[in-house]
Image (tube, rainbow, N blue to C red; front, side, top):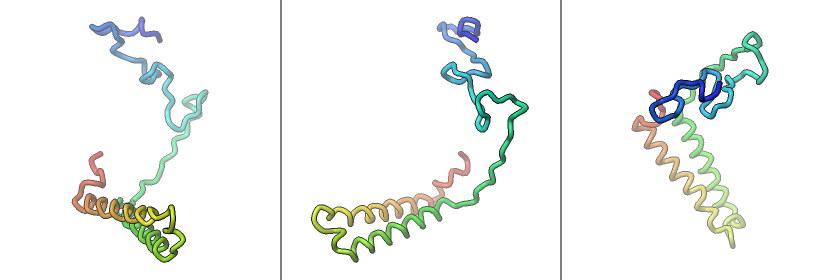
Length: 114
């Protein structure tokens, strides 16, 4: 369907788009449907809901950064010469994890209303 056959707005733009066209005029494809498939070929896959609290991910990330910091501190070759900055990478990761923990504990990070 061309833009000329669509309803024209007061500024000369098309106000409506065809249901089969995306935002850029291309044919919209539904997720999970291969191009060229018909509606009778469509298979709906129901994904299970994941019950994972975000704060648990932050805690595990902090554990991994703590292990990385311990490894860098225990092995001197990892922090000598041009690698002296390697110590600060896990420190920064732990710092960001603390900020994430505080943010989530205050109830702002689980996006329940998103």
